[in-house]
Image (cartoon, rainbow, N blue to C red; front, side, top):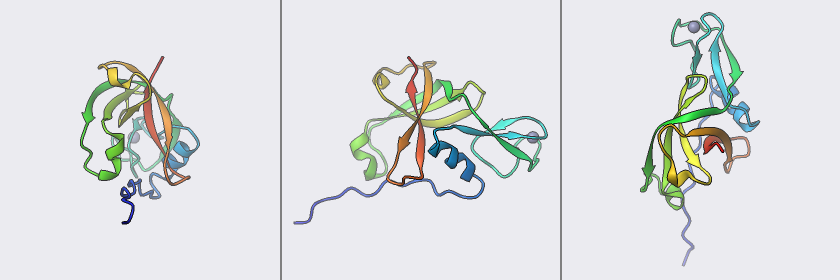
Length: 140
Ligand SMILES: [Zn+2]
């Protein structure tokens, strides 16, 4: 009888717009877009500034620090590939730069997470050596 294998986890499909973001993540840096015209920061990566529609965008490294805005527990992942990781703490983080990101909370103490808890970014390996996923851990 054939051994049962879990389906492979899906990974981001990198495009020219978000390529710098993923290159930064692979190097352990959390990058945000910054508009050269109006100075606004934005996430996720887009071809233009969401505020003034300028296509003149730069990349800056975020502090990687923030706080839990909200969270939920995923006990039954939609993809069976994530079944063994459940329950997954799915979080909404407000970075110190004011940007909201969705991610996961991992590491010790995650089971006791509360609204407002301080977190810091970490980068999770995937089965593709060129892609690391930004996740968060509770800050000590
Ligand atoms: Zn702008």
